[in-house]
Length: 168
Figure 1 (cartoon, one colour):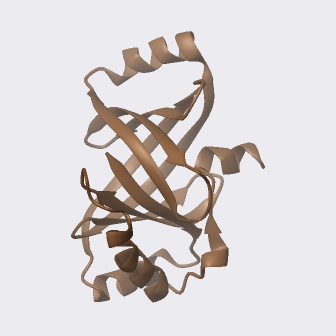
Figure 2 (cartoon, rainbow, N blue to C red):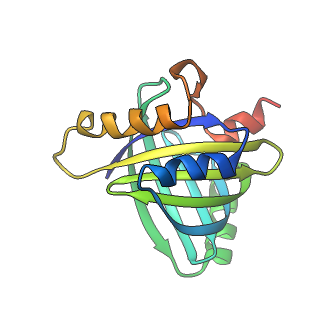
């Protein structure tokens, strides 16, 4: 699977949600998430634990820059505690990121409004790209949402939350 994504700081999560709702985005969930990142030779591997269960997520970003294209794979995890123990023993951890995420959606676009422990408030847009589709077809919707949230391209962030934590 692929997605086109953008990440940015937010000063006001409620205002961002209001502006997204005005564009037709609907709140789908509030998620308490813990992502544990593991040492791997390429890409990123994390175990995500949240309200509804757990999943192992592997992803690679094509190039770098504020709007990034990611290839990813997700596998549900039935026993997160045991899986975490095995992966920590086998690979070692890079970081653990805890956040509360408000998930909003419209069509194939996901807006995450995140309150990240030790970092603050952020927004993240993910345009889920269907197999064989051109990611550029979703760029207009991403740009529309960025404009509504008053996010300028220069303020987009090109690193993950765990990389931001490591720089502190």
